[in-house]
Amino acid sequence: MVENLKIESADAGEKEKVTAIDEAAARKVKADVMKLQAECKGILDEALPAFNKAIAALDTLKAGDISEVKMYQKPKDELVMVFSAVCLL
Picture 1: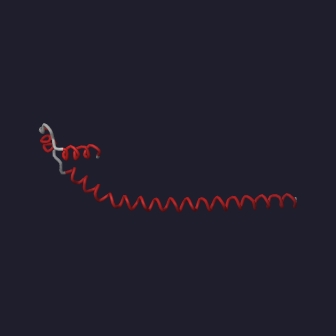
Picture 2: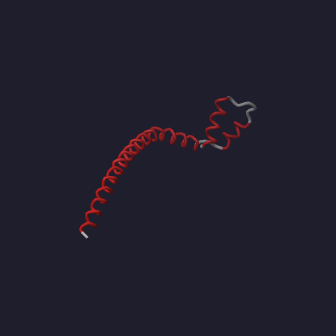
Picture 3: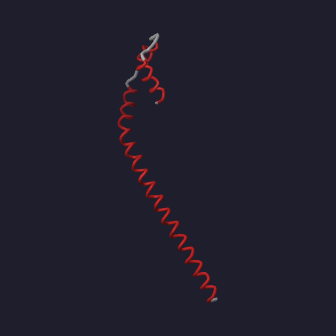
């Protein structure tokens, strides 16, 4: 019984070493993920005001505005670009 306890204790010590290595690796991955998350949040915080402003501008469009553009034989490139962006939203 004492020998079994010694063997189990040695096994537990080995498992503890492996677990400590895994824990250190997991902490490093977590730190990398947290850094990436902070960077992404910064980019998103920077982009959201422009996005919200664009959505608000879309809310001002009326059906007549779109009908007016349909009448153009060859709309300017800038106008085509704007409507392409509107279609993406």
